[in-house]
Length: 407
Image 1 (tube, rainbow, N blue to C red):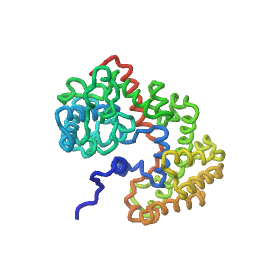
Image 2 (tube, one colour):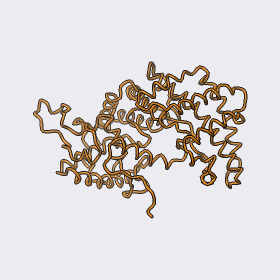
Image 3 (tube, helix red, strand yellow):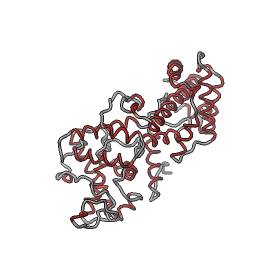
């Protein structure tokens, strides 16, 4: 029997994007959604940074993909032939970027031309959301459309014509780009300025728009957006959304730590090798978390604001999820001065939540799955894509500061 897999044919763009993220997600143990908080996490991420995804790596891919489609169309390809031409050239681009020397964030860095998920697939949603791609549809569907606008007279040649699949004003590719001898991720001044304008126009009243407009570099040391000096300068609804994300991240980190503590205890009971000391480490981290959680004042947190933000994104949290979060916040607030690690109500709440989410696949009641535990399951604090967004923002800032008009 062939091994199970996750695949799709020609489903909607939304379905394909969700499938790609699932594939990437299940390969990152530290990011697993063990307690079923993913809908809230994604809604807050999309509120703060619309058009982004934790799959994104480098900003210049937002130009590479349309360059390839437009060039393929210029050479007379269309439909399935254009799709094949773009895919082949995306694989050639991997080698050029590798030879360029800047390999951080290179899609295909290790697999090379054999990589299974290509940049066009990863960036498709972002291209559409930022208005760089002007038509709905999957890669295959869009390849069947006219890629370049109809010829216009000189008086209108710079207008954003309605029949263009790609934004006509996109900066031209460097003259030697399609030789694939060498390439890099550094944005030119023109490219960075154009991307900044696109994002600002496409995502109004978001933290992403605010930060692009500020145009300042963000320290690599900031782990979360609420640690960034530029982000905390935001005001109004943008700042309120950031504050809600911070509260949710801090509060639910405690639930994740307690879950991992319970797993560590179960691993000890089963005598699983390699888990020595993990119970004590998670207990210590939970004690530290209790001190940190006081900064968000959970007793004064109005969760109705959180539910309203989530609902605006079209991802209303289920009643069971809202109840779990509310009960956890109440327990965390009421445990001030006591060890949450020893709180029977908190432990039972986590056990019930895992069982509700995973039923027979719940590790705390499935010893076979428990034996596969790697020592950490979603134990990190939610970042809402900040590391990805920070890099893209900094690349735009650096490009705008560069005097090169072209590469």
